[in-house]
Image (cartoon, rainbow, N blue to C red):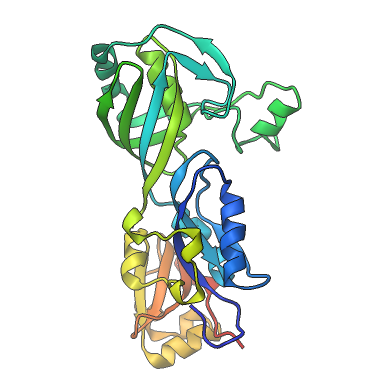
Length: 301
């Protein structure tokens, strides 16, 4: 979304990330196709071996990453049983082997991994441990103590199992490590496992049908946030008339805008604001009985 030629491109794209490239590499390649020195970020990293949806944000939209990132994710995962790697994925070194599980043993443990569960992130991850990335501590010869965290597995469906590999569909909350899930399912089934392949098929309201490959990126394809998408991202929505929209763009105190005067501000951490033509204006927060700006998409000069 650009307002005039020569202005910083801004908006978002849903990229179908290829295997073998880091999320940062793909983002850099996409940004280069939009123009020189384009500010870019993404909402949720994919490991280099993984493919699928990577939400990429450009220009001032990079400041909205947290709002895009909070959404749940869906994956198609292939688990390899009988061995475990140090990275819990196909790029690592085998560090453990065990007998293969039976189909009955695998099916018996899957209910334990649905709903609210707890998991330890992989040591080869970007999680901070005492101010330092866990993977960096491993590379420095340390053994980081990973803290267990709560996650939600809304869906876990076994599609196939050939005795060695299982293909599963997984719907989960933000912060879920599918590599850890593979490890834990393998152990629970009396074996061991690592994540052999992973494809992200959905991120919040976005599916693979919304995605494009990096080679097909253009400025004309940049998408703005709409009111419907804001609701799908679990944001509340407020629409302003033209006079109030102009005041909002210029950062006028919200207590002077009639729409906000009439709305209770309690407990609204993220509210997306649009004009009557569905043009995105920014994000506000209603806390402690008062409205405040979180982000304003003022007109580019």
